[in-house]
Structures are given as C-alpha cells and as structure tokens.
Image 1 (cartoon, one colour):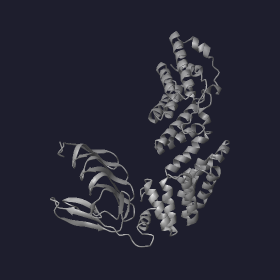
Image 2 (cartoon, rainbow, N blue to C red):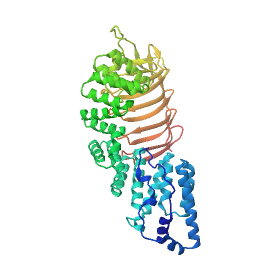
Image 3 (tube, helix red, strand yellow):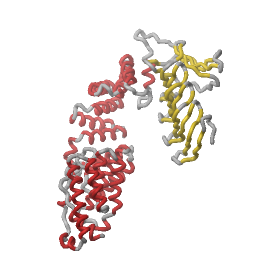
Image 4 (cartoon, rainbow, N blue to C red):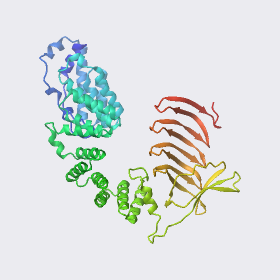
Length: 494
C-alpha cells in the first residue's frame, strides 16, 4: 500500500488552484501549484507497470474526478467540486488533496464543521510516516491544513483551538507570515493584548511584510490591543493610520473617540463620534458614545437626543462601558425650562378577588420613551395575589427596564394590561445574563433557561401555564448534567 500511495502522490496533478483563504486574505501557501515542488528521483512509469490493471484504472478515475473538482473549485462551483472530490475520496481514500479542497469548498459554503472534519482527516492520515518530511510538499500541505483549520475555528470563536492550529502551521512552515498575523488576531480575542502586539511586531520582520503597511485591519486591531492596555497615545496613532488609509472606516472614528474620551478630550471625542455617525447613521452605539461625551460637557439636551436615538436603534442602556447611561436618561426627564417632569407608576399587589390592593412601590424617578420605561431597582417584595403595574392610573402595556444599584441592567420585563406578558430577562450585576423566559397572562409559559455567572447553562426546560412541563435538565457550573426530570401538564414530576 505504501508503494501505491507513493506512486499516487507522484501521479496526482493539479490543473490550477483557486483562492484558498476563507477570510479573503491572500495566502500564497494555498495557491501554489504543488507540481512545482522539488520531486525525489523516482520513475513513476516503472512503478506504475508493477501495479495491477485495476489499480491503474483507479488511479485514472481518481485523477479524473479530482481534476474535475479542481476545475469546478476554480469556477467557484463549490457544490459541484464537493461532489467530485467526494468521488475521488471514494475511489482512493488515503490521498490528502481531495480532502483539502473539499474542506476549502465546504468552508466557502459556510459548512465550517464539515470543513474541520476534512482538514482533521488529513492530519489523521499522518502521511509523514509514509513519505518522510521532505516529500512532494507534504509538510507545506500540512502547514496549510492547520492554517485553514485555525481560520475556521477563529470564525467559530474557538480561539484556543485556533491559536494552537496557527502555532502548528507556523512551526511546520516558518515562512507563513499569515499564521503569525492570525496568532496576533487570536490573542487579541483572548485578551492577551501584549501577546497580540508582539505577534503583530513579528509580522513586520518577514520579507513580504510590505503589504501590511496598507492593511487597515492590521492597524485597527493593533489599536484595539493598545487601547485595552491603556496605551491611549499608541492607540490614537494606530487609528489615525487606519483613517489615513480609509477615511470612510467608521469603526476607526468610533474607537478614536473612545481614546479621546479616555484622555478627557471630550470635544475631540464628540467630533470623532459625529464622524462615525455621519458615515453610518444606523449604528446606535455611535449615538450612545456621543450622548455620553455630550453629557460629560454638560450638553444634556444633545445627550438626551442621542440617547433616545440609540435606544430607538435597539441599544440597551447599561450594556456598554459607559454604564452611567442611566444618568443621561435621568437628564431626559427635564423639560427645556428646567422643570422636572413628574409622572406616576405604581406597582400594585391585588388580592385574589381583585377587590383590594396594596402598593409594593410608588415610582417617581423614571424615564419613559414610546413603549418602555426605565426604573430604579425592581422591588423584591413578593405578591401572593395578582401583581399589576399602573402608569397614569392605567394598566401598563410595554417593556420596563430595571437596573441594579451599580447602574447595570438588572431585568427587561414585558407587560400587557399591567401584568407580565412576553419575554423576561434577568442579569447579574456584572451584566451577564442570569435567566431568560417568557410569560403569558401573568404566568410563565415557554422555554426557560438560567445561567451561572460564568455563563455556563444552569438549567433549562419548558413551562406551561405557570407549571413545569416536559423535560427539565440541570447542570453544574462546569456543564456536566446533574439531573433530568419529566413533568406532566400539572407540573408533577413523573
């Protein structure tokens, strides 16, 4: 079998190679024609003569299927290419190249898990044992396989897995500057900002580093890393390079605005956040930034206008670094003449017959805009009867945001005619989701999920008309299943 594989590796030809990199970043390693690799001194014709007629036919069928696949790959017909590469694999399953190009085809069709399986299969073939380290570009192929698999893991946010693959790609092929570059990108996602900057600096030592002088993503990510390290002067320099290369790159203006804010240059922060808004007026975060910058300068009317626009564009207050966004909302309760706008919200608890009630809490300091209200921390008092929220003496319909004492969002609750109806979300004081569920006519109804503070799932199941229903599962904070129960329609555990 070893001789057959050896012969096939010599006989397999590649017509042309398409762009390999799934992230649209040029990677010369995956576009190189492997026929140009240095070959061992070996006569394939003599070896082929020793093969059986059937083996020769299989080789020809294999080559035909693979060549069709490569042609379709170059024409961006990835579905057709997958069919042909699969056929080649069925004929001879131990040759790496069909797996490689089938993996690239799958990644281009966003079948990332399928692509990972193909790339992993090549690694499992372990062709080093068959051919040695210098045979026909196989080490080069392995470097490309690890690099491409690392790219896909990065897309899937498996950053630790991606980092391991990029390191392996660079170890196999030390000339692969892209492996080093993506080590930098990946370390930045893992919050190893010093490691990211070190990798970015190493990139500049490669012979083909000149192309990165005009790479906006390179400078942009360097800027993010420096900002997180509180090197605001360095970050300003990096974002300025991005803007010089692309004056329409709105993200760079927004990030430079954050740098200006960090060094208390609020006026420049407003200018840059305004530039970002002008380039992308549908990004609510930019209005959020400018609202806070205006608020710092005492321009509360402008801040109020921007914060309302941010909320209109689905920005959740308390979800970003400027957690004092609630202070801006408080400023919005002031009329232009300076008089405080007083309205009335009552959290009432009714007896079961609804003939009498007591007030859990009477809210006066809040912000209302269209269909939602922002309130101080939700009252923790229980209500054994029926809880109804009133606004201006009417049963309230809409969404209410409650906040923790530290200003972060505590819960988002929907009401219909004063009672719970719709989605319900609860958050820890650090801003991470604690639970999410749904209510209907005041009773829990639908999917329920709760989470630990490390974001690991704690429990999940369904409720029906206020009772557990169907399968419920609970986990420990490491994701291990602890218990599984089944409930009938009355909420009884079978």
